[in-house]
Image (cartoon, rainbow, N blue to C red; front, side):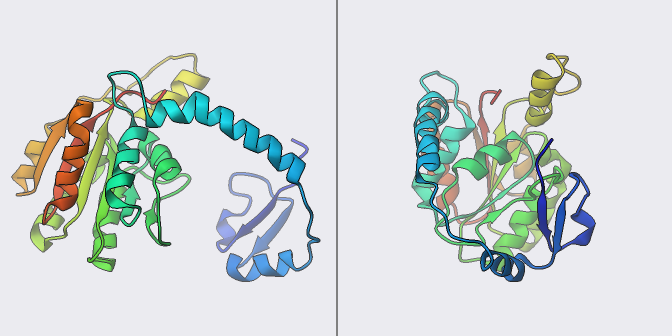
Length: 250
């Protein structure tokens, strides 16, 4: 509560929108940040940073290792992204929808180039991922474009499969299906004493829906099929939908 907030934003409507700002800086960060850093004296916080390096090791051991290399039979979102990284080499453009898959993707996806992580950010809207992927492909058709979407978000703009069908956008669609509105469920778990309300999802046969739009695809639920399914999706000449059944991330 005692913190003083300096908020840099190109959009004045965002300042004081969610958090009261002590010092608002309205402008393009490419211009305003260098002006600020010129006034700041360089300091060395090596001891302080060393503490975080130790905490990072603990996080890798206790959290990240289990997410990327789980020992259970249930696949995690993290390991799916990890295998995707290996197969794309970090050269793909990845768009996300909104939800737990978005958090996991933005944390673990590897990018070799800028303008490769297309996400709606804070307070984004479910349904963003698929149309964003179509736009990304038209912007860079030589790239592999992968839309990573949850089983809730895909149904918000699933009709855009019609756009893909009509115009031939070679978008790869990966649905991470945990049979929940995962982010909403997580908040209900953490902050509302597990009083779950309307977070269970009964989904359609997404592969069948895609095939109705003449888009190939498949559904997998076992780890042994993950790598080959991802490779099939990436190598396919055209749009492709892959549904991966994963466990809850909370």
